[in-house]
Amino acid sequence: MDKPAILIVDDQSANLVALEALLEDFDVNLLQASSGKQALELLADNEVSLVLLDVQMPEMDGYEVATLMRESMQSHSVPIIFVTAINRDLQQILKGYESGAVDFLTKPVEPEILISKVRVFLELDQKTRQLEESNRALEQSLAEVERLKYHNELLLRSIGEGVISLDRRGNVIFANPAAQTLFGETSPIIGSTLDERVSGDNARKMVEQIIRDCLGGKKWGGTLPARRQSVTFPAEIIATPLSDDKGHIAGVSIAFQDATEKQRREMELRAETERDPLTGLCNRRGLERLLHRRLLYGADKLALLYLDLDEFKPVNDRLGHQAGDAVLKEISTRFSDAMRQTDLIARVGGDEFCILVTGDEPEKAARIVAEKIIESAREPIVHGSLAMEVGASVGIALASIGSTPVTLMHKADQAMYLAKRAGGNRYEVAGSSGGTPSEAASG
Image (tube, rainbow, N blue to C red):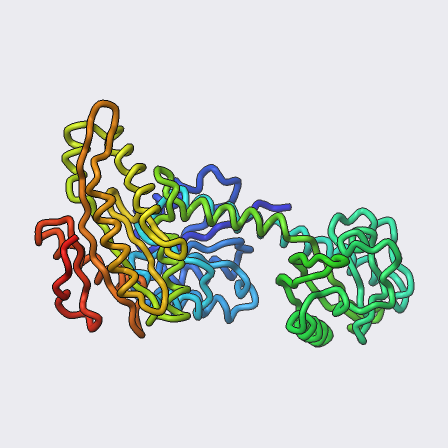
């Protein structure tokens, strides 16, 4: 199997050099393009596994490049990660996904996040290649058998993935031993249908569409919820048209595997990249992702608290970072104890935290949480023989229709600075219309 190729697209040579340096430990072929036109030319001439695509480029921006890639048979299925300096507001993100992106990275790129994402997509590419090779091997073997009556058992038994063949009506006419095992069947499944092996009406409708597409000459790749006796598991499949010895499409060939472990690793990776290593709390990235989801399903029942410690810098300056880290860990525990179980806390900066409050009366709940936060921050923090006092300033912003994570965090941040300028150890509530923050009760 040839080395996978990664295409890096950026009109700034310094960015190309920096991304290439971050990816040098991967066993891949790195291709570079300094414009959208050059990127499309390289994609036409090379088999590419992943594209890291700059958004802001002259003549042809990243969105246009992604759209043209999706219209090309050569590159329509290549994953695209946008690497951008543009603020990741909801409008920009939706535009990116509409043009074909699978994820975003914000400049300056965090090396660990980039490397983790690239590793996941390379693993997916490797699995896809293996499945395609299995399908090609099956197709070649079936082409030698008249009217699909006999199969090369030796070859098919050596394939690690599950492989089944369907006739034009969707009936299983062949299943290798791996398929039997993945479906948890001890007796042959020949004569059954694939929709009996999936879970849910939507999955069964999708099976019907897959068969129609393949009989029409198309290929299909993706994940379906499959059933193994009473257990549902994610099955990653590649379906291709199956031809008889005369070259006519006579059925469907499907290679598949259990994707449970792969999805578990992806979830662990996401959790790792969305966790603050010092406090164990959610980080800014995780908060923004959760805010996106919550804002889509009830902006009128959400408030955001932005917290900043009032006297943290002197602790770091006089006592050092070790004492500063001890303060952050202790204050994180206190803040977590002060909020409700339904709320979420994140560390979004050095001594800055956010708390996401939801409910039918978000402002009332946010004020109560803010008062508890301020009270808990007032208590001295003991580190060795020292007792340190920090205090906290809190800004509260209420979400409304049209709010985005960026605008909501900015509004809460501005309210927090008003509280700090008013002497600290208090909170301010930003006006729901986005105007001047209202007068808030002192903690």
